[in-house]
Image 1 (cartoon, rainbow, N blue to C red):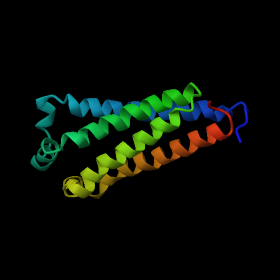
Image 2: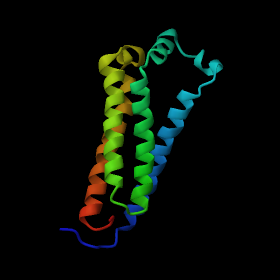
Image 3: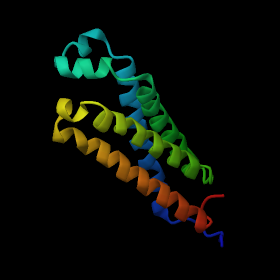
Length: 143
């Protein structure tokens, strides 16, 4: 049952933080997609090989994850229920990207255990945003 309650003040804060988080992801995607050769050459050979051998589908998953998440955050701020769909798409794409990065490739060898920190945060924040947006829908904060 949906109600039409006014969202709490934390709703806007969470929406803004979600947008900032996803814009950071967009920045990292664009930085990797348009990385100057001078920057690329500062990476180790293993990191360069990993980046050069990343399949197009994993790169596409990265793009889908960050852009869908950004649009989802905008949708949340606009109080639109389609934010749930976009947050879900974002999480699924992030999972696909990390399946390649840490299961189907040597990403763990290249990045080490500390390389799992950001992917773990991405998954946890993605799960939170889906849960929160579903709660927002159930409470009538989004429609």
